[in-house]
Image (cartoon, rainbow, N blue to C red; front, side, top):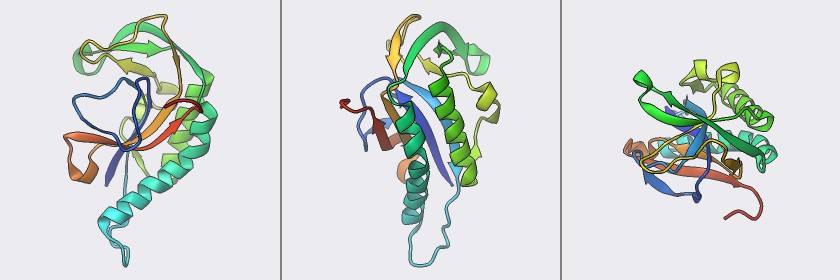
Length: 175
């Protein structure tokens, strides 16, 4: 089983970047999911099968990610998510391109038999937001451009303490 997540970063990141699970760059979660890989495939290793699955998922995300890049997003009010409202966030105001990207990623994951970890928070229940992290946060009224969409491995090489950016889609001219 491979635990992956699609996000839209609002801070600069690089493909292949590794960061601690406790120190995410600011981001909007697009979809978190698990996907199985065929560990019994002949002449391949588990690592290769797992990489192939991630590549197939990334390939299905190419067109939706490219179509959404450049969308203007507006930061909404502060809110509290998580258990007992313990996670401070800023909501992202509804935006058709962001919603379409989310829905297309749901369809891509479904097409590969993936398991969405928070089904109540998808499709009509999707509430895009950016969690505050330490002193880093967005503010109501801020404008954000959707210029970095990423597929992130939540436990690269089985290490649950780190995250790795597997694929990064960027708007032209972005570093």
